[in-house]
Amino acid sequence: MLQYKRWSEVPGYLMNKSQLERLGLQPKHADAPDGIINYYSDGYYKREHLYDVERCVPIENFQISIEHIEMNTENLAEALYIINKFAKRKRDTKKDHYLQGNYALVKSLKNKEHELYQLKSQVLAKLLSEGRAEILGIHKQIINTKEKREVINHLLLIQVGEHTFHRPAKAKDIKKYPFLGEIDIISAEKESTSLTFLEAVKLLEKYLASNQLHKGN
Image 1 (tube, one colour):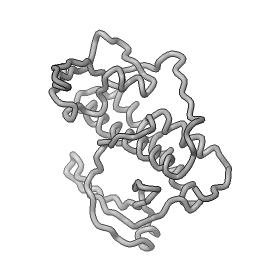
Image 2 (spheres, one colour):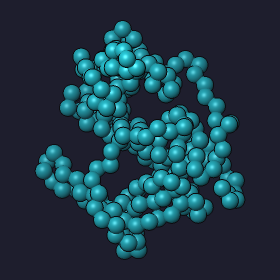
Image 3 (cartoon, one colour):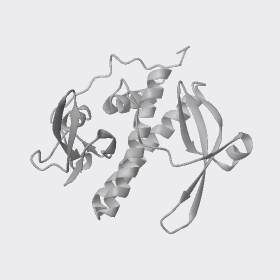
């Protein structure tokens, strides 16, 4: 069983029960954790079980409301930030499970990662069409594959509120926008946010379904 001494060491796919609950999930087998963290906090040593989020199940009758969340640019930007980091967490988790030989989970993770990036792409396209997002330029990303090949990606850098995002650039984009330099693989580490993952997804889906004209913010 995987064991950790600091939260910074815990991979994104392992969560305690409180973290899972915020995602509307619970361990399928609570007495069979996938990891343990022993850490020191507030003058005490603490021990918590950790569970692989991909092996967890939905909480029955779990409901979430976003009626109190305004559909303004800042909230949409934060929601995009959350699902973007969650997709990158799927990317990293996929690699870990591949190395462990969990190929069925790898396929599931790949599908979920794709769904989140599709949602991100659709929201960015709509925000750009409404003038609520701005294209800043082009980044080049060089990835060395396990086959020792170089894969070169050209990415549009798009600003929404206080956050920036990337999406694949087309040939015409590369000619049109300024080159901003090279970047490495973007980390899946996430800063603290006011929205949960489920709230973020629901807000973005509501935004895509809405045909309201944006006025101001």
